[in-house]
Amino acid sequence: MLPYEETPAKKVLALLKQSGGGLSVKDLCERLDLSSMAVRRQLTLLEGKDLVFSHKNKQKIGRPTNSYFLTDQGHEEFHQDYANLAVDLLVSLRSLDGKEKLNEVFETRKQEYLQRYRQKIPGKTLEARVNQMTQLLTQDGYMANWERVGSNKYLIKEMNCSVAQVAERFPHLCIYEEELLSELLQAKVTRKHHLLHKDHYCSYLVEG
Image (cartoon, rainbow, N blue to C red; front, top):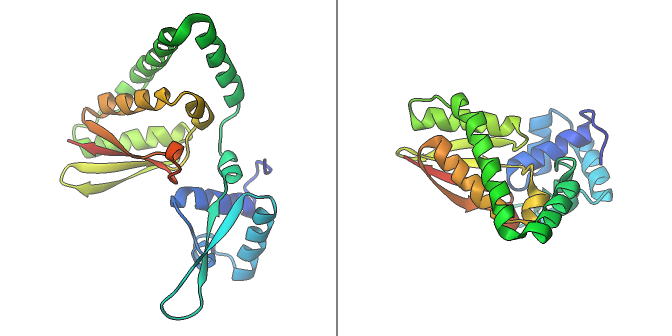
């Protein structure tokens, strides 16, 4: 794990995480206001730690350019603490009381989130509620953003998953998240991208 302070390397990792894909050296220079040499120095450091890898893009004209992406280990830099403990506890609960008890735990968690968030999403329009929901998700570590994709249709992207390691062992947790968003936003919510399916982020289509 890299040091907590906002070092240039940390900023590069955060930008790659938020991009939902790859960024070139030029992209990083513009967003960080750093020279090409300084950015390449950080990328070399991160590649040496197996946090970043590059992919060569062929150009119709000129030399190929590299896009940089986070490795699996790079993504783990953003995972929350205590994930392994949570997994162990859920495994033990399933062994002792079965899947039904585990589903009760996930449902209880969903209901607690509904109570916690419902009053924080008072928007009268769907767009207002999507905006408020995205802010709350970001506060919870999901690095979320949204965009309008049609008439009363919006796409919420979660660039980080605070419960990724738990969801890998208990994918059913993701179904409850989809249900939670639908109830809070008072709209139809459909998952379009999924980190567990090797996408670069999770996303949900929200339709009024």
